[in-house]
Amino acid sequence: VIMATSTGDSGAACPSGSCTYHDDSNGIESDNSNYLTVEGLTIEDMYVAVNGGPDGGGGACMWGHGTSTNWTITGNTFHDMSWCVNLQYEGTSSNITVSNNQIYNIDHGIAFGSGHSGTTLENVNVYGNNIHDYANWDTGAADVWHHDGIHIWGYNDDGSDTVTGVNIYNNKFGGCIGQNPTAHVFIDRKSVV
Image (cartoon, rainbow, N blue to C red):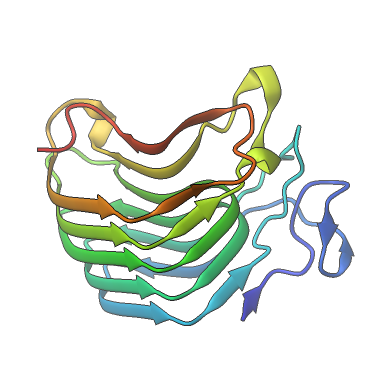
């Protein structure tokens, strides 16, 4: 188990009692990682949010950046953080599998996005996940957090990135999705070929 014990919104119930820290915290962070497997792990309470917040933090269960290849994330339980599986890819990132995970109390369940033009994401499989309950990340009319179960995008949505071979199937979405969802599966235009 990887757990933050006191990180979240004021008034939220953290494992240690009241949430006293309001910053991002990540369960696992990787930079240009290859052959990464995360299996049978619980990552929880990286940031406990309350509806109408959050106070400014977020965190992730897994935050990857750079070129990433041959990832397998399977059979895990991830909950209470802003963005759960968050890969900000660069260069050519490929052979990514996210399967059979329980993901809940989040703003984004699984996110693949690029902050650089001319990048490639290929051979991605997302299946068998149960992604639910986004409402604790609602911010009302401000709509600071747009909830997505799965979100894929390219750099500035300008068409300079190549995203190919993405397979999303047999995932379950639901629970209390809140007032600020975009979609359970949101793929920005000009990103996926």
